[in-house]
Amino acid sequence: MKKILITNDDGFESEGLLALAEALKPLGEVTIVAPTIEKSACGHSLTLTKPLHFVQLEEHFYKLDDGTPSDCIFLSLTKLFPKENRPDIVISGINIGSNMGEDITYSGTASAAMEAVLQGIPAIAISQVYKESGKSIDKFGYGLAQKSIAALVQKIFEGDFPLPPRKFLNINVPPVPTSDCKGFKVTRAGNRLYAHDAEVHINPRGKEYYWIGLPALGWMETKGHVTDFEAINDGYVSITPVHLDMTSYDDIHTLEKWI
Image (tube, rainbow, N blue to C red; front, side):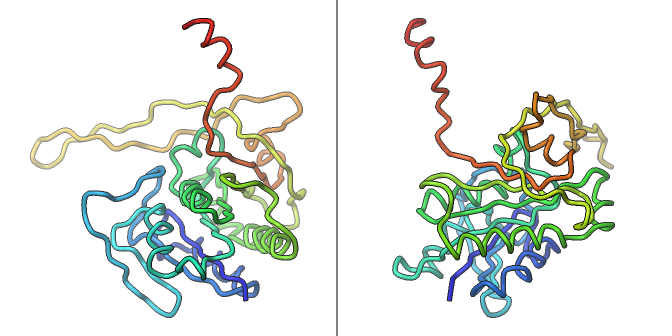
């Protein structure tokens, strides 16, 4: 039986995580190791300054007390999966909200997949896009995301993972009914338009504090609609191959001349 390790950055009680487990259980033995609390936008962080604890909730289901998604994968391979019994694949998600463009660098969901491929295990990050602060989740649910990830994992198990080592698949699912989805589209990561969105408040003791908000989902359009943003906007499930080598190869010669 294939072994599937799943995690997320929304916490162990997330509906998206439970929907992912439900979709994958027909394909293999699913083990869940997820953060105790939401760790959105924590990036590829590991906890180095305090101990962490596994809390078993039921068979093959654990929460990692105050751990990050990367902690969940790193420590799962220590405690639950010795080298001769490693998972066949790691799936991170189903994230509540998009992980497109440069948001991949912020994403705890994507970072769990990064940690997996660093450890030599094929990985996929999957996110459900919404446009109205979760209203589209309530309207459409996770059916399309479940169908999409099950089909892709089945294809991998019947053949091979389509990428070489240290690369993972970043999947974003459009907020549309399953019947309206136009299929899969292979994309590149787009360029998001960022803005400052932070509210300033005063607590009851008169101390000022800030709360970082969620900017609007804007992006720079490209010819041919080849980015993840545009695929989602056009009603496709976006599949972006991501690699961890962040070297800007096009600029090496220019930099050598500059030096």
